[in-house]
Image (cartoon, rainbow, N blue to C red):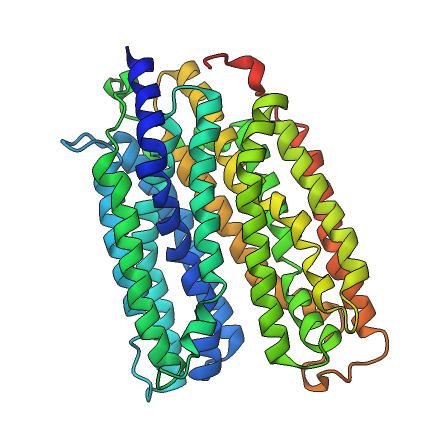
Length: 451
């Protein structure tokens, strides 16, 4: 009966109510990431290095809040369930933070702007963690089989990608002439985005009934014991390292690609580059949307780990193409690598959570404790860690490649070529490393036949 109920729930409510939560999950983080440099670094004059650290510091806090939230949610016993109350709170709080971030006094000092930014981003982690960790855990435990876990995560990923298309054009929106300036535009756009976060984030909290868990009646697992068990799980560690490597293969060298596009491909024409960046970003997410159902079907046919490895191979192809298209006057050719890089992130946002759900289910079978919240928290923290490392590390990679900011398009001979090689080989090497790490994952589809 439990299996039948879960199956009916996944079929009838998956697309309606769980998936849109992925919209809120994505834009609560990436909407800020898209606008924070244009607004705080350019419009308000805060040092870009400080802006980068302001984005990275909250991830250090996540090292504590994500596992804490996972433990609290796993052990929570309330009228409305273990996940839904926190999802609802997180959606509302995140929406308010995204809307409020841009209301810093424009005439304040740069030091004040920096502390405002750091403070708001730190506070916002309360909302994003309260939402994301129980939200992913809800998807992990609501599916009744391995294949359905992939389906739940695939639909979440679809809304991730759908929101990503809109996020790519947010800076263009805040620069529209109908606003008095980009800060004024960010305040309006931020309010709209905040409302969208609240609406889409509340859907899973209000309309998905949590599946009853026998493991909820067993002894509570203390935070540090649960965190320690997770860190000793071989398959968790394999997925964690592979996730960091996949993100790094695309994002660690992304700053190199930005400067190559502006100064080498388009000869310093920022307006033209901005147009192609928007088109390229849209292409990346649209291709990702198309890949989601294909990858879910592919994973069902050949297994999730092999499908993940296929995605890493696609990234390698994209990295090779980068070497030949990031050249002067390439124009539309710079979009081509996105057709091969997009499946890579599908692996991270569809297959990695689905594989992690399998690990959590196996852990529950072995130990009799339901710890999906801790596994969801751990995966969320690893993802944020990867984003932080790439945000901070990308600047150092740019410097190591020989970039001279003052020289603009008049870089020293060989600089652009060096940047292009690092841009390409960084993607190739890190993607191959992710594929090799995945070979150590030993919990495959044959270990659990519930579908």
